[in-house]
Length: 368
Image (cartoon, rainbow, N blue to C red):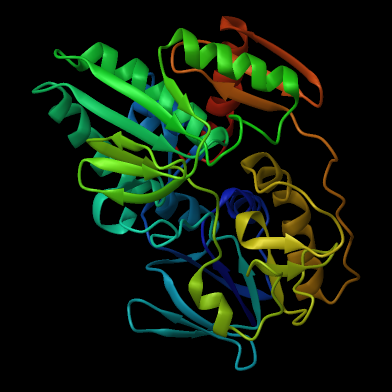
């Protein structure tokens, strides 16, 4: 019997677990490795911060999902992968030998990309850690006025700064000032001009100050910007882009230029065909797509199919991710912006649409 190790409980692996619950792999023993007992759905975290959801509404409990799939659940994280020896070293001290390895570990944020951030900032990832910290921020906001700055001009930063503004306006008795530092570009610079315009208008309506500047250093009580300006800041929040896990560098796997696992159209490693990868930890060698939860969700079914085929000795199927994706951006209150290529609309109905999609996604993986 072959040993399949699922490393990480990202969006694609949630689908694999659910599918295994419906139809197991008779020829494989499956282990799931994840450092947290639940998976918080990133698409609903801004709504959690804004106060629209409770923690249980945005989370999937992993132990019941794994049990239903007859999958061994190891509540720990990987510290090393050896693609030659075909082993995974775990933080618990164990070493797992595998026949087939699938990685979907989700985004990682570098603590050292900006000097001083490790010591003074709150990081959005891991979401579990962030969830424990932002509640303390709200408690502090009830005692004095705060300057809160979110660093990151992508969807994560934009959604989060509007969510924080909405919640702080509701709970802060002494007021709060919210700012967004984008990294030198317009907010949502990778999206169409129509999306950028709607986002700028939404930020302006919420009196969020936008600095199209870079953050060079995080100091106690202030950020140093690329322009030389010093921005007062009581709570810097890092919503930066994804980085590759540091342990990948010594794994022996072929990596992309930015350190992610290079994969083929079948979602296999370009260097080790017994290793699969999906989501933010992977980088397709044949197509370029953004690191987004939308693409990670869509990768679940082809990943599951090819894991079954590979273990069973069948011919694998190529997967072509869609060229464009529907993006739904929460605006803090019960409104959202929808975009598809150059098209963009906004309103309360978009929020209700997004809310329905998100609740259905999480509900799909809840047991009982």
